[in-house]
Length: 335
Image (cartoon, rainbow, N blue to C red; front, side):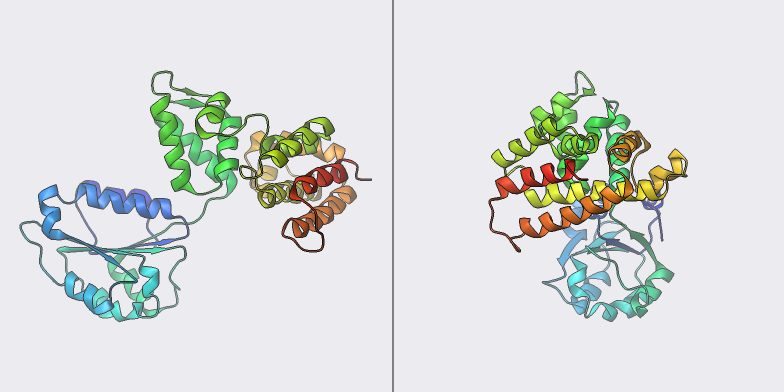
């Protein structure tokens, strides 16, 4: 597999492979690399004759090969971009003959999103010989937080760890969505160059006091008043705070707390790696571990599973507004 920096270096030096396979679950890097090719390789005038964009659902293997075998007009290269190539999965092996003898003046870019090609397939084995292959994998939460932090600091801005975590919690692991919101923040805050919790609340629309991050923390601390306030706020604003998402985050916290108890002899660095979190947040788990022993954590996880089913309409007919409040009470009062 090739790295992002290797492919970016190809673009910078204009030393291209005839084929680039960009595949995987995370769309952001696939789109990022593709846009770099389009913006950097051809001039606007050259694009009129030498940029060919095809879609997996609307094209055939024969059409792709036919276009790839054409020579560029008034340019050293032509780009053939196949978007949504995963929709060609049944006929993808039909490209093998072209993969064996690709035209050097054609840059074939294959966007194979949401999954990766089966590495046992004959087509993949042939691509390994004449193509550069980049696999874009989904990042874990702690990796996403590092990505957010690095993106912002590399642009010359500062941001605190709690704000980073709040962005991640609210926007999930979708780097494209996060990137759009971060770009907005950078533009708005370009004079001060400091991003704070108030900015997250104001410009992304996340409450700095009433969010899943604070609910998780309140439960870990057994802070009943705070946890109940947040659950009441969520009940009043269900569209912005879907119950299924909140329950999933609470479940994730207590699942990691179970791991914390089970690996209590590990040092901080190894513990953070085991839990898949930034070491900064270990203190939350240390506090929670004093409030919930191993047996209680197992019981809490069982209760959360109950309410996960309830939230999906299984086994109980209650308003969502009351389910989270009930769950909070049961967790904090666990014996």
